[in-house]
Length: 554
Image (cartoon, rainbow, N blue to C red):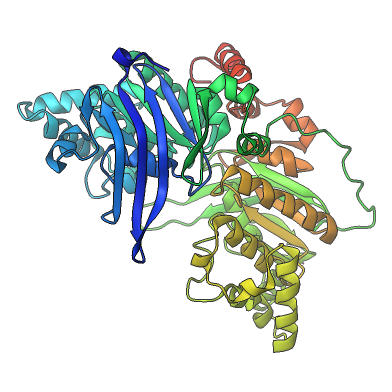
């Protein structure tokens, strides 16, 4: 990496332990790296690998039961064992952090401007309010918020996810830090917004000549942004080197498995569409569907979905894609009877959903399974998972023996040991909890499965196993699937057909091959161009191609 005299941050033999149940438990051990001006180091690995723990220890942000050892030098200053007062001076001024979820990192009761001004004045005590405001507006313009003055006076909830992330980046760079720690900075963002944020980080990195440590499990983001990378597993660095070298010639088996697990847009073989049974009726059918959020107080009514028409037949997977606010989740909610329909037609398993009675709705819901985005929050933490899985069976008035037998079958189906039926959600990993969610969704042999971003919260290798499981079960059970996602690589892997939504309108739909290999709409082309591919050289070329086609923000 950098020569010693050029190094901004250097870790040597860094280790982190936590005091748990009367003993010290290792979270990271023997971590070595150095980052120089203008360089980006990616720390990658699955949840629990020690990547975030190692990075947060640089700022002294470990929990009270944590301790760090070894050496971390900022320029020539040792940070391990430094006084708390000195670490507080360093945080925000010399080392700043960009977190995954800006809504939890920003204070909801203060305006964006107030929070940036506060960060500036904490480290520049002689700066007046007017000077700090001028600097804050300059920063908001630097991160390309369209109306800096409006953003300055806005509260976090009044900005979109991408705008909040830009505001948090503005706050992070307010004191021209030597080092930026970006912890999963784009995981919660749409693919187009992600591309804009990555481009912003790249430009700021050049302009400020600061160092960046990028913590992520998204190998496409690593390929897009980083110069060097270290791969962590179980608290240990298993591989380190330049990003291009590791992607081209990974040496450790874990790195090879991690790269192999990444869905790669455009590499899935294009198979012929599964032939439809000419006698079959669609499991989901909508025609000219309009869905409106009703007026609330001074907030006017809002037409969220306009003239949506699509069909899904038994055994088919339709990927519904688009940015946040495009209307895709609204359609999913209407399909399961959670959104009122203004006009048009909607049928699920032959049952008309427009004007459906509560009794009929309860019956049709037995034909619908739902898999949610966050498996942790969708399971009752006080119930063992066996009870969560059998809840639909109980509502369907099955006997205790039938429920017990079915829970065992479902656990087998999602490849979890039957003994897990007595475990609680917190005792399972994220991937295991999502398997429980799938088991519960399939409990009543639904004719339609609605999966709303079911793998976006999972590590890449866990995601790969869950997607493979979904494919196997769907092939055997032959239920129709409405797969809602903003991850086009995952949609490419799973879907037969794709519908693209923008501002509440389905702007394009067709077979997977038609949409991903020969898109007709500029919006679809932009979505596809924004997906980072896990190949540094190919991604650099895609980025340049996108700039030529769509301009600097493409």
